[in-house]
Length: 83
Image (cartoon, rainbow, N blue to C red; front, side, top):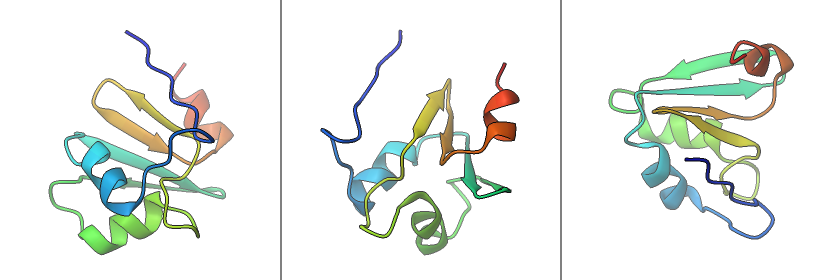
């Protein structure tokens, strides 16, 4: 099943964003050329929120869920590894 949520229409604040990704097995965050992986069960809550949310405090776009892994932010290398 594919679910698409338009970030311009549906906004997730910090706590909603954390609730969405908290059950993931892994969260991969792209920040420029840097790619960081987090285990949401052991990661520092504040640090994880800082990485997955933008300046407005909302979940960064794009965010992609593949199985139980979330990919946050844009990085060509990160997305090409999904092919």
